Amino acid sequence: MVLEKLGSSLYDAIKRMLRAPTVDREVVKTLIRDFQRALLQADVDVKLVFELSKRIEEKAFEELPPGISRREHLIRVIYDELTRLVGEKAQPLDLRPGTQNIYMLIGIQGSGKTTTAAKLARYLQKRGFKTALICADTFRPGAYDQLKQLAESIKVDFYGDPECRDPIEIARRGVERFRDYEAVIIDTSGRHKEEKPLLEEMRRIAEAVKPREVILVIDATIGQQAASQAKAFKEATEIGSIIVAKLDGSARGGGALSSVAATGAPIKFIGTGESVDDLEPFDPPRFIGRLLGMGDIESLVKRVKEAEVEVSERDVRAILSGKFTLEDLYGQLEAMRKLGPLRRIISMLPGFGYELPSDVFDIAEERLDKWRVIIQSMTPEERENPRILNASRIRRIARGSGTEERDVRELIKQYNAMRKMLKQLRGRRRLLRQLQRFRLG
Ligand SMILES: Nc1nc2c(ncn2[C@@H]2O[C@H](COP(=O)(O)OP(=O)(O)OP(=O)(O)O)[C@@H](O)[C@H]2O)c(=O)[nH]1
Ligand SMILES: [Mg+2]
Image 1 (cartoon, rainbow, N blue to C red):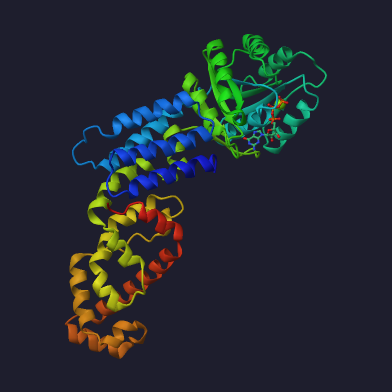
Image 2: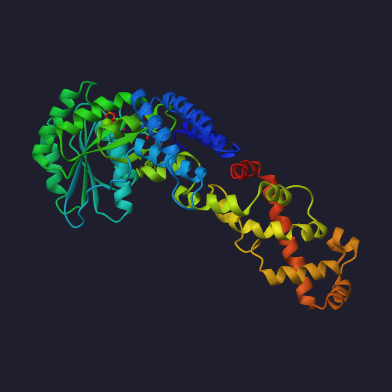
């Protein structure tokens, strides 16, 4: 996961807020202070951190829309503000199918251009676009071989000329050769840290090949220093977009993302590893949701209130603690029913999503009534140790409770499924932690 440390610090701060008995000014202040510390540690610009803090503080105690709790409101505010910090909404690559779309990658030395060129080629080819790579890096020895090998490994057509010293000439020839391709990606040579020669070369090649987009590859490890590159770049070209590479394992990635976003230059992809598959479209709301480990926060937020109303911490405890016999089931049927909405929350948390069977906890009212009678017809021994329920006992219980044998069998089956489920849940300490975030104040 990218920016793991930032994500977990922010998440911890939110967790504390959710667990506070009431959300008052003191709680919000603490939350903001925790956020500030986490963001500054990720190298986010002080000014941006300050602005974010101010907005959260202002909005936290806005009048609540009807039917929305303070906690829910705060989660929304936090989520919106963090999303805004990295760019609001996803901005897809400008790609017009059926035409030749040329993408030119530029960036300072070692920023990740060549790797990213291959990643992007793979990404587009996988989506069905006829794709090719061109090596217009005539500066670094080995650049040609590096891209050629990458192109071969992902089976993308490639053009380059190790004999030729003129990048513009190579770019021109490559573009000509790949005339009927939909995505043609040009890798260029890395420049020194100054922005001027970088932008100059960009202009010269761009003039010659008329790219659909010029893409600046920024190394996330430089943190908020990315701002000046992004700013100069944005001013130099209308058709510029940005890929932030090396976001994996970079503690300063938050600084890179936020400072680039602040310039208004669109971040279209992020690089999240060294392999050709480690490229993903950058989608700020989704990114923040994942950063916070909250899955789909939009849906989650909708459920917070539901959980607040319907599931008390006592219920959760009752369900998740202690042994679970039919005797317990009897006392817990009601609480169990309330797991319905809770289950939907659990299913939205990453890592648990699809493991929960959908119907184990959905129990209809009438079945509950029936089960109550059935359990009452059992001996204490049977309730304590349902394993002893053999055919003749089941027959007796059905008769005694005025139900069918299959009702009794169904109850036993359901009980066993629940028991298994709960055993798994108890084993998941992380889940317990997640559940506690939703406890009631
Ligand atoms: N961890 C990680 N490493 C990356 C990523 N992108 C690139 N790298 C590594 O960064 C180093 C430089 O990558 P290149 O693609 O060669 O960079 P470049 O900008 O083409 O370099 P020059 O052509 O010399 O300017 C290589 O070791 C890559 O494996 C990424 O997203 N994550
Ligand atoms: Mg390169």
